[in-house]
Image 1 (cartoon, one colour):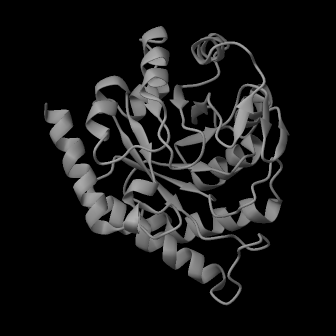
Image 2: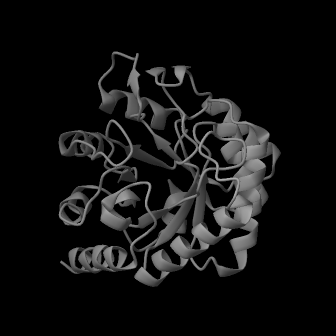
Length: 269
C-alpha cells in the first residue's frame, strides 16, 4: 500500500479517464480520422481534465468494443504511440488500462512510464468475453522482469461485464487478494462502465480493509461524489465528465470543472 500512498500522499485522488477513440484494427475504428484523430481526441480530453484540476489521468481503450482478454499487440502499440505523442503535455500522474489484458497493460506502463495500472487481476468470471481467469502472478512477475516493480497495481475485485464464479462474498475476495500481496489499492465497481458501485459494497470492503486504499471505480457522479469520498479513498471517473454524461462522448470541460469544484468542497468539509 506504500506505493499508492507515495503516489497520492495527501489526497483522496480523483483519477479521470482519457478514453481513446477506437484503435486500428478494432470494429469501430475510424479509418478516415486515422491515428492522428485518436491523438487529437485524447489531447482535447487530457487538456480539459487537467485544467479542471483532476489528481491523475488514466488512458484506456474503452472504445475497443467488443473487448478481448488477449489483446492484439497492435492495439498496445497504438496506445503507446498515442501516449508518446501526448507525453510532453501530461502534467499529472498517469496510468493505463488495456481492456482486459493485464500483461499488455503492464507492457504499456513500462513503455510509456505510467505510474499505475488498473486491471482485473484476481478472481474467476463468466463474462461477455467468455471464461475470464486473470493471472495476477504472471502480471506482477512481468512487471519485475521489465524493471517496473514500482508500478502501482489497482485491482478491480468486482469485474464489469461479468459474474463472479467465486461464491465467497465480495469482501472476502477482496481480503484474500490483499493477503496475497497483489494490489496496492482495491477497486469496487458497478455491473458495467458508468454504472455506480453499490454503496453497501463500498462500505463493506472498506470496513473489512481499513488500512488498504479502496476506491470507487465506476459510476461516480456530481451528486454522489461527496458521499463516495466519505467512505472511499478516492475514485475513478469517466462518464460523468463527458458531454451529456455519455461514456462515448468527449469530455465536457464545464462538467469536469463542476465535478472538481464539488470534490474540493467535499475535501474541505
